[in-house]
Image 1: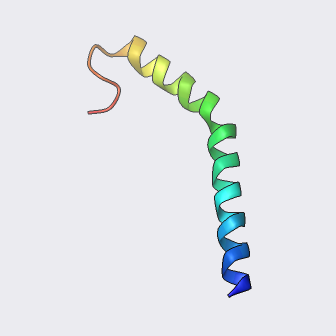
Image 2: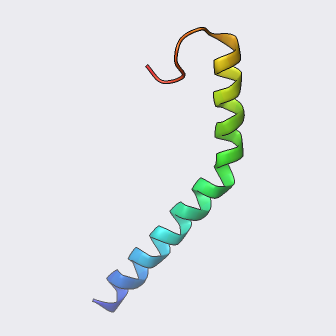
Length: 43
């Protein structure tokens, strides 16, 4: 039971860190798609 709680906390922390690290890349991709095409970024 204790192992499952630790695993859950580690999974959540790593996913939040991953989103924070990748957010500038996603922002650059969104801006480049928006400048290149006339439609919305997501279909």
